[in-house]
Amino acid sequence: NKLELYLPGEWIPEKQSYVILMNMISSEQEVAWKSLPKNISGTLILSGILAEQRKEYAEFATRCGWKLKECTEKEGW
Image (cartoon, rainbow, N blue to C red; front, side, top):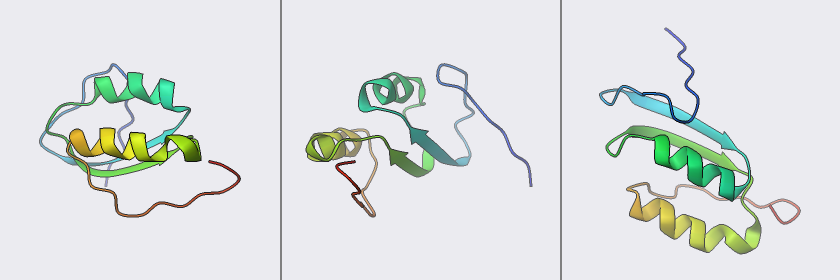
């Protein structure tokens, strides 16, 4: 097994499956989304989305090709 870490804006190889973690507010996640290749596959784990932004954010993620598997809320996040 190998572990590779990439920062937003860095090149990410496209022909692999990834686990992508984002724990930042939605405006910062917008920047990170722009750095992802169009056809990347894997699992995306998010936090930092306000409850009132969840629907809009989920619609955005769906337009980017992701499917919502599970959603939990704690203290408005």
